[in-house]
Image (cartoon, rainbow, N blue to C red; front, side, top):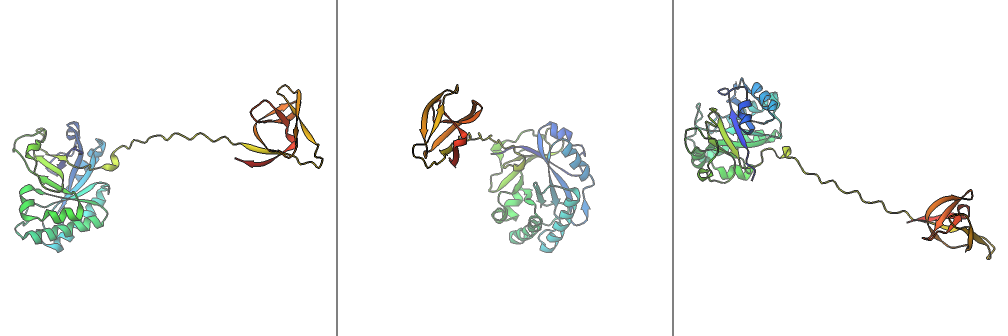
Length: 294
């Protein structure tokens, strides 16, 4: 299981993310937009700082559409427009923050709330981005059909659940909000006393950034190319080729019309000669022709 720290930031947080990186945050989820008219004025600076600190950048949108499908689609389009302007990579996640704040009505039926949420997520997904849904654990259980969400988009829930409202540096998994499909757990709103939300991942949020161990394949040894030669055919059945040793002394005779594997070449007595067989026996190359290669 992949567990890395992430922070989420908005205009309420610093534009300089160095302190978060120093404390171990590998990812940042930057608030991009809200409704159909607001965008985070610090987003560009926060993203620039994240990149300078070698952090992975994701984005999120704060919903105000409640259970309205048409407004959900409009907000999603506004969100995507701002995401493209900020040049957030399609390799990262874009999250929908759907909670009971800033006029977002959460009192609709679980069915209607989920339908609107899925409408928003579909627009984002269709634009080529990976999607995530954020809310508090209690609201997810009572107001959203999370099974429909994860059936459609897999492990994509970003769940907020705090063991205490005081400072927390590391998550206590004895208080983990157990439910299906959790990708990210927001376990505090005061991580390391930095007044920033602290999150721990349950999945690999950036598999493309994982270094792959490439085993260098051993190059196969080239096979020995055995060249087979045959002596020139001569009409005289008694005709033969005089063989030499390595020092150029003539040895025995080689009958014509036979094939031999060549193991080397050498100039002997001013002639190019072929080494035939495994013994030191050589024959002038001019009497041979290539038959085939093996």
